[in-house]
Image (cartoon, rainbow, N blue to C red; front, top):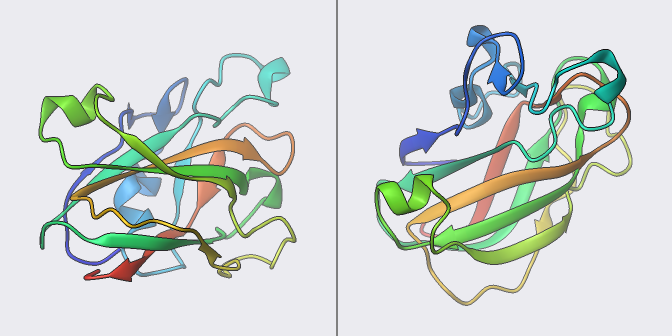
Length: 167
């Protein structure tokens, strides 16, 4: 993503439940570099929960330039384990500020569907861009992973790119 002023992971650095490894932090998912990655364990508690580990992990960004119109999203794979690829995602927009964004108040669903990675494009490769109808500009966008490719202890991706006007 371009011109991002604030990124909120809604989780913390660490190697367990609700965390992400410090060397695979969220800024890696918006740095325009597919050789780095963001990984999140999400609801990782026990080995038998690999079906849900990493699901419902999310982040939001607030754009420096103000409101922009998102009309597509492209996700790029990370360097290992295709099982961790996000398959179904949502994108929401908001023009609220500060604490309302963190606590999930006033988010509007823009897209809920395929990540563009249903057919594995390989490692360190961007999937198909998913275009959607949207006529409302937002200052902040929230990305959520709701399904991954297979059983794994986390979800990972190297880039999330929003496409549209004024990005």
